[in-house]
Image (cartoon, rainbow, N blue to C red; front, side):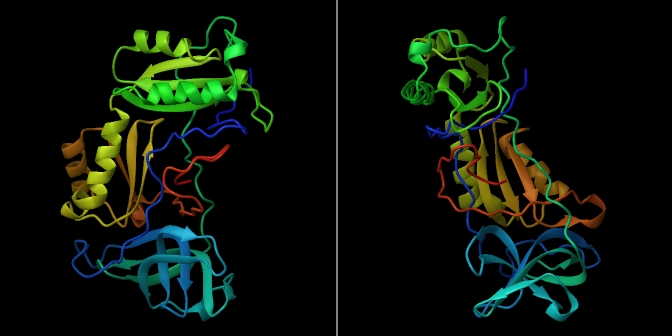
Length: 311
């Protein structure tokens, strides 16, 4: 059977994330340890210059306006005359580029500019983690598999103290008319799964998967708030966005750079698998395809057929 993952049906909104992209902070001297001068970093992303500021490499949220708006790293030795493919409007110029250069903790000195790589597809896999029942994912009681029932089972699951998140999978190909009875409700908990499944089946008559996670939703909220407020800076990290990922049971933080020492310190504080650091700048030898944050939604927003956070 063809299985396509998704977030929610066209007719319902299901909150499955902890928070969305956060504005990039103002980067100033002393905010981040200065890497060795010879270390070269590279990244794909947007360069933006406006009437308000010189050329900057965008970090965190990019407002999808005309012209775009963002906050980021000031660029040294940037030359619009030496690049192609930029756009301009209302006194601003911007474009997507692959940059190679050095980072001094305050600004990025450009050494090379090239065409950016296609963005990597790194969306979570929403496949229900439970084994498919004999006979497939079918509604046990279609009369209790409406949009209202889906909302009710979500509220019931997330109301439990040991709730670790709620999301949905689809049976077959999702569409604007996918009936709730072809949606697999997935509820994660850290405690008694048998009790939770029994109680949720009293609310929801559609396909149901109850699974175990290590950390509760409340724990992920706490980590996200604590890290955003003070821990990131305490560990010498400049955070540019943050997002909860209930599918993978962790919190993701965008940072300017993240070395092995920082990764180890975060793991020691929060435990393995609790936090994923996503650096905007990576050493040339270790670079992976990057991603640019573009958000037109509010934190904790819910949207049909999309993950309301980082792409």
